[in-house]
Image (cartoon, rainbow, N blue to C red; front, side):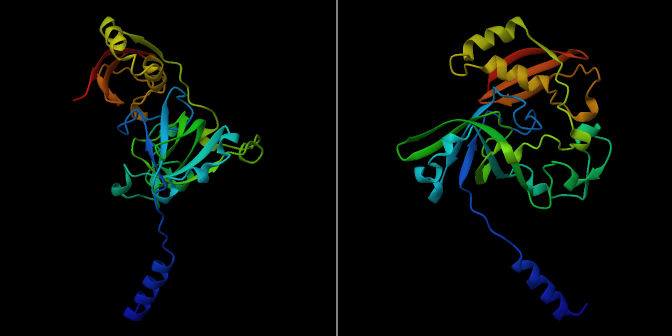
Length: 251
């Protein structure tokens, strides 16, 4: 290919590029990728905020949005964007060992690092000229950039006879969670600030946040996960039982 041809191809590619501005930022209890549910609405105790910003921080943009119980959030995978992407990935639902096409999955490592998530809209507030959408059931990292918001429309978006391939059914969450005496003491210290902390921990851990290849395997490693400004340490005590060891504030 001649230099002129290469320049023409590059010019065509540049013409097909798009730029999107952030319209909001997510405030979430998930401060790191580990332990975030792999799909939305698996952990309904997870509550967060969509904080509108820039020109989009205008309550007129969300007029009548409370007529809808759920919203689509279109966002950027900012936490994994720098790692690039590959055509084949290992989805957790296939045990993390089998490769399949990235566009046949919801992997975060995509040709364009864009994701979409359905969340429950709890309420809308505007205080001191700051408009905020209060949501629950989110599966988004704290600080996630939002580039669009659309209402969830049940008659169109919920297709009852749709086929879900290898992800047709909800993953098994039959894991029992118990709190040690130390963890119970820690909970009492933080429950005033985080009223549903115990439920949030239980729902997150019941999804087994470990890598997929470790699922259904006994593992005596002590894990830590970050929710809000807290570090929660836990370990498996059986194939389907987890013990929360302690909860400490991060400095």
